[in-house]
Image (tube, rainbow, N blue to C red; front, side, top):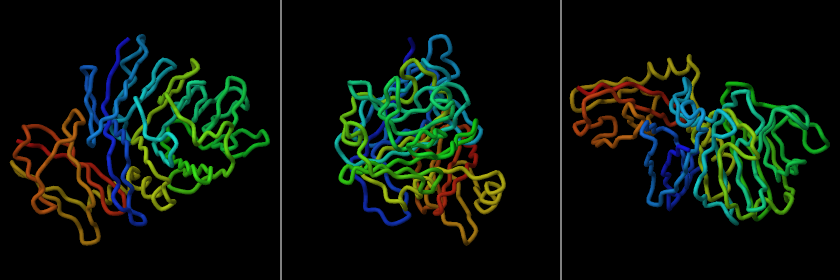
Length: 336
């Protein structure tokens, strides 16, 4: 069976944060890079974390990193044999948080995300059949017969916590979960807003478990169709302001808002550089440049708005620009 390997960076330090500033993750899967050769090295920070993608041998082409019309390169699962297994995450016996974007494709009844103990217990589960025949997404002490967690984002109404299902086919949703080991509390945020919280200790003290397997996708032979983007892990409990900033830092503008922001940021190019010009009310917070394979490239930045491209080979590049409100747009730069 073909395997595609990703290397992920674990950032060693987290700078001091101010309210509403986007937090810095310890682990960050951007899924920006695509490599048709089957093996990819992707590294951020000094301590790489390895993740191995195993596609279904019968259908490996449509799974893995694909291009999404809204979010660009993303990670896709298409059937029960697809999954991404992460070598390790810094979350055992510590406060931690995670966030990611997810778009359900309407198929399947398997795991969205599985953090597994040796016993087989898992942390996140999604199904659209059985129990109440509803789309579900909830932290759970999962067994084959019964979901055991009181925290739900689902349509189940079984005496625990009833919350309307929010997953719509082919619609992106952003989720943040924080795990407070001191207060045994899990807090969830959905699309940049507080969603639900539990103060109960899960069955077997779920928060403090030592997890041995980390997977996006397949488990218990079930299918997990959908797309993922910007999967992050933090070794701290994010505040509500930080959770909202995490959402704002990776959200995608509507077509109308994108057109407005595009008109407020101009890119002027020449052979060996490009310059960004903005209207007075726009402040640029971050600029990233990618080649046509989705690989990030480093550029010298002498005066913040001027970028030296003399080290680039000729070709097309994508310039991803984010302002101080967390909005981002992409522009093209053609190096002659």
